[in-house]
Image (cartoon, rainbow, N blue to C red):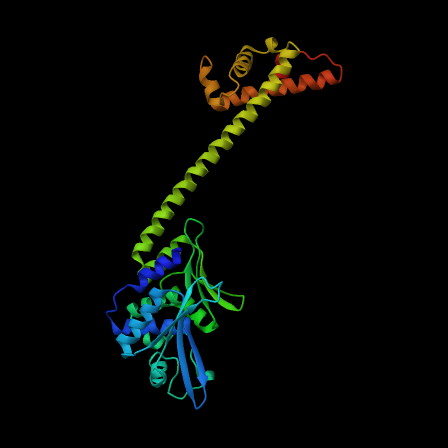
Length: 331
């Protein structure tokens, strides 16, 4: 079962207590799962279709509680490789017009597809609880949230641009920064940030799924923090090793030309320490000196040793004998 299915099943099982919220739910479900067919003699047929059995039961209960409808339920195989059942709930023909008017899809009982209002029906969303119910039902009808183990992504897929924009604006009233794009003939309202998706789940009332989502988020963030620390430490170790190997190469040049023992005592002591302790950090080398020396002091002396070695090599290439003296150490 997908993470979205877990959320939808939880939402579908919430109690129906307030009629205003129930109306908000069925209004959202019609706009996201409904198919309206205009027949002859000004007759109209409405069918709400879903692949989720729990949502189908929710629609059935909402219509029964709100309008005492004896709906016709059909089950057939989905077109998608025929792996899933598709549940259709057909509304009684004699109650269709009053139903559409009640959920603000039409203004009067005169049926005209051009006058259908597919946007979010703000007229029946006067209370905060109704707005939350509408968001919840919209998610049940056309929403999805990806598995938080893989990525953070939530979206509502709509056929109508006005409904997609309406959901986007409704979410913004809860400080959820949703965005809308057009993709593959659908209007997608999406959310990318983990914290914003948590807020969405809280608005919808999917509390059990929210706890699981937050647990995964905490584990992922802890794991990412640990990885960052390890990567940082690894990078520092690599830097220490690279620096150490360069210093050792330069000191070996001085040793090869028998110049290491001509170094001043403070540089000579450090050069031999570096050869002996190849992986030691600058701080560790400084602590081995007598008297101990700070990190910057050790770094300064090692740079001076490297400069002497480089100058020695340069002079050797020119065929000039290089002598270590106080003057070229200080320059």
